[in-house]
Length: 222
DNA sequence: AGGCCGATGGCCT
DNA sequence: GGCCATCGGCCTT
Image 1 (tube, rainbow, N blue to C red):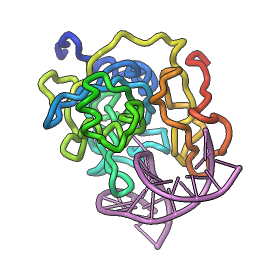
Image 2: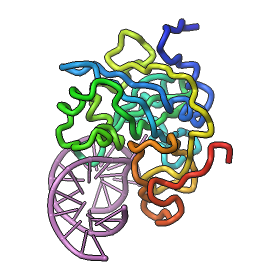
Image 3: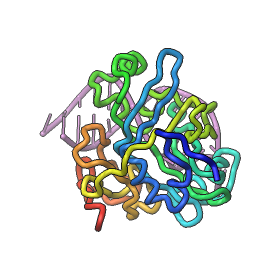
Image 4: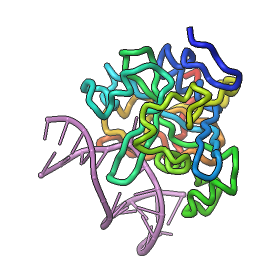
């Protein structure tokens, strides 16, 4: 049994299933050491991906060099490169050998605002600093070399800080953004009312209507 | 506020 | 060769 350090989220809290893990991650903080200062973001929007039975998951067709981290233990960064220019970051879930991950889609900057704006000058408004998975990864400086980093290790350059579980009444859910496969699964979770939550965009073949705007999601209990 | 488009490279059929 | 778990700029309502 690995010990837990005060303030860190334990990997055990991500091991049972990807949906529970996704909700558990909402409200938690990701802190990353950048060349200048440590930048920290409070997660407000995430998406769950599961290996074996989720056609939208990178691990659906089995293990490859790219997705290998998804098959490892929970609590590690799975960073991938997409559209020839962007990185996106997940936190792995489930037990070793069982692929799963939660995509970090959006967050609000906790500290510090000045450094964050210096890192992403194109974001005119603070709310846009980590609004979107590639923006979030960019703000935290997450790149190829961070693939596999253990975010439950206090000595890591990227760390996952625990927060008390959020009030379920504040959590909303809806279809994942931009995925063509399994677009009917409501595996995107966000905190109601956060201005940093991204706008919903259907994937290829998914119905254009339905979730609306930000994704007028449903209550967690439904 | 919303739609379209170009950038740009790795991964998989 | 086609498809991306995207972003930012520019265009029209």
